[in-house]
Amino acid sequence: MKVQNYRQVKNIIAGSGVTMRVVAGPAEKAPNFVMRVFEIEKGSATPLHTHPWEHEIFIVSGKGVVRGAGRESPLQEGDAVTVLPGEQHSFLNTGRDIFRLICVVPLVDGKMPGMPARD
Image 1: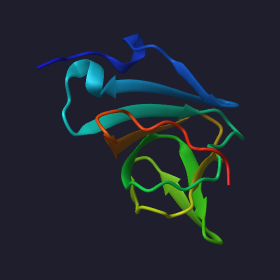
Image 2: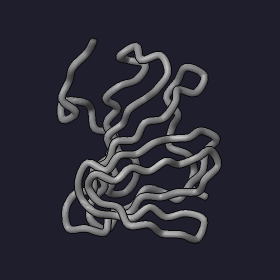
Image 3: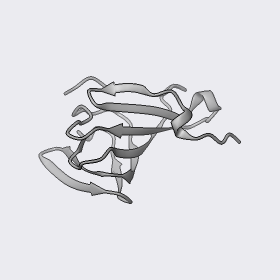
Image 4: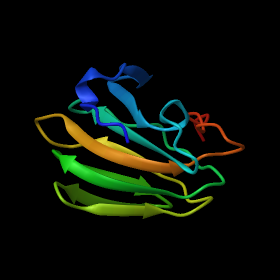
């Protein structure tokens, strides 16, 4: 068992105004999933993209929207989102504070999937 504070994990730039910290994954010997904490600055967003794996998101703090397939759904603290394989999606911070979310993805061929190219 490994316990760590996410703030002590290396911060990775995942886009303009978007950072990611991998808090559980291959380095922790997690066999199936990767857990990442994303922080999205005011007015910033993750790229609109798709990929062949599912992922689950939990909103820790802040306000935003998830966009994709011509839809936009508001998000706030405590909300959960399931993104199915092949679903187009992007997360945008619409609030005044950091939009913080936990994102869990499966390992792909034993590795953490990367940020896909923009669609």
